[in-house]
Length: 119
Image (cartoon, rainbow, N blue to C red; front, side, top):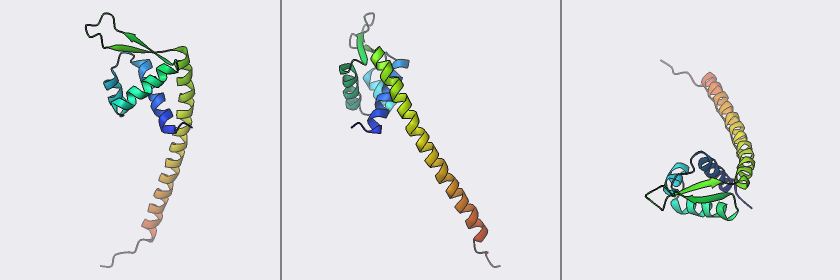
């Protein structure tokens, strides 16, 4: 079973690659806030699943540079991951909003019943 964290990293990686296919793995890791090893692991998994293709920069002097291209499978996966990501973030938002409302209510009640300082 995949955890939401794994799904979030895959979603964010696919989204980042769609927008910036020429980023290095080090740049990707920095953008996602994960280790270089984790980035490499997830990229290899996505390539293995046929969701990402790796292309060399032919015109580049640095032949170690690659472009990571989303395949139709990758685009489909990104769409599904986007829906799940959005669902989880909405739940988090609703829970946080309810907690904020509760805390604000506690503060307002506490201000009303706070002992008055005698002069």
